[in-house]
Length: 343
Image 1 (cartoon, rainbow, N blue to C red):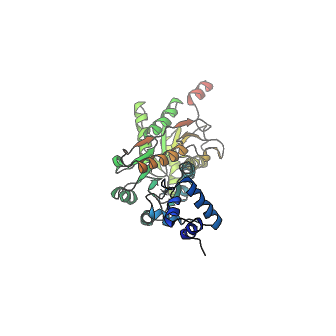
Image 2: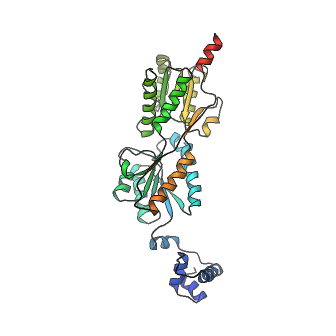
Image 3: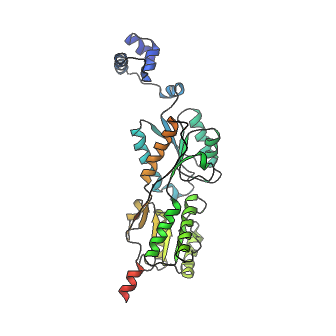
């Protein structure tokens, strides 16, 4: 038989409401009384009903973290999500809150799970790990004035949404300019998704950097289906790039494998640079030159921004930009130095 608040109250000789206020650490209860109540709880083995307490108080002290609908094996195993949620868990622990996760096999299922979590007061609001066009989850959060923060730049509601992101246009520029400084002029942008804002912003930065250097940007290449991989050999021969920008590290490994299959050696006759600086950059040689987007900082600041708006509801919704760092490794050949060596 479980121990109740009434049992604890009877043990201490106080009213059940005093025990309830002690559980909430209410200032109206003296320190001495709180200590007596807590000792009685330990003695009797009382375990608070967290769900019931959440329904009775203003905050549940829990944040819902919403995953995208992960439609492919590549995206499910992307280390970005693990690194982000690890950082969020650590920051949540420091802030005395917990993390719960919302996921779904379809967009409809994801929305239902988010709605259920909030209706049951299991969370105070949500952090979205993704952005997508016409997202019903974001629409639900905005229309119902539910506290939320987005990692990324939303397509809609950007003025009314707290978000934490990198400057993805600048990331595209940084990668492109680095290759140009190494003597590369024919640079190909390769991706395995094209509708997400992250890709579009990075590709736009690539285009602007190429144009500013009076170079012709090449059309981006999408590799998703088996026929795309087969066609990549023809694209390499026709476009004759000396370097590729891959949309992230995990995909960069695929690009390197394909290049090797078609007779290209990285970096000797095809350089590769990517984004995220994840574990994949140093799994095999050559180690991948990558731009570190500081995923851990994205996760940490997302929690901080969420709690800020939760505690101060009138606070202006902010967009916080996390800086990036270029990590030079082994997959980019300096054509200028190579040319001098040949001479």
